[in-house]
Image 1 (cartoon, rainbow, N blue to C red):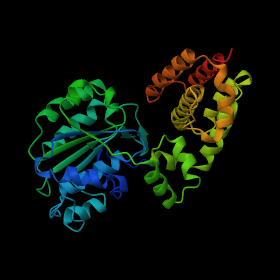
Image 2 (cartoon, rainbow, N blue to C red):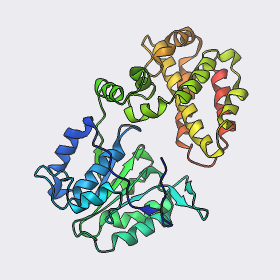
Image 3 (cartoon, rainbow, N blue to C red):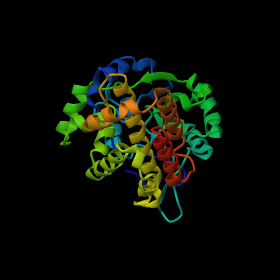
Image 4 (cartoon, rainbow, N blue to C red):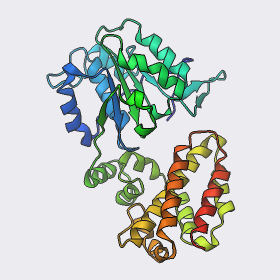
Length: 348
């Protein structure tokens, strides 16, 4: 959910979500070294495994005024209370968001340099609570070139007791100059059983199937479990199962069924479906079982022998390149048409 930001797009963080079960050990090991906590940390990992949740819990522990002996936040001091109310003055979140004149929050394609300059101004102020100051940049890979360059000096020489945490799904998109100035922490990923149990406890129907669609990422699976998205996925995959009669134009036009500001997200999801489908085709062709789409196993097996492996590999790579560009200006329907025609051509 997008929440309001101030006119500088540097805002108080939301109330903390609970640490996820599969994060407990990694968090305990990290906080055991709290006395030597790095001033700049890059938290990486796949989408939907809880990196933001982990970073927020680290932040709460760094800001706590009476931390437990194991380094975790006490949950009862003034800082923890401010955090629970989403009003901690020494914690800031920098995101690709901007408050427009009409009061609406606009989602940006990148994190611009102005956001980082204002973050730097905030970092130079005296801490309100006198414990520490923590800033999160999420997702860090959306820093534009000028923003990344502006951040370098602060990453290397932050003010005393000031900690920066960059959260990235795709750290390779960050400049090497940024990555080299950060301590890198790979966020823990749950096992299949841990993720499935967590989803079942959250009341997610067909947890194993949705988890497979999400590539084992449980937080992503909760979003994909939405009945409307499941119905849309079924339409797309049923069409992909019959490539020679694939209605590319009609299928791509479905991206425009929702609000205009939803079209890029719908395109991203469609590319994910295409990528998962073609990866499963390659697995089945090699004698394996589909990972992302086990509910379409029969259709995948029927198609696996009809496509050349090299052409399939090249097409899948093109999908990955296009997925990285989804946040940038583009025309979602036309992009989807091109990708669908390319898929159909694999079977000629």
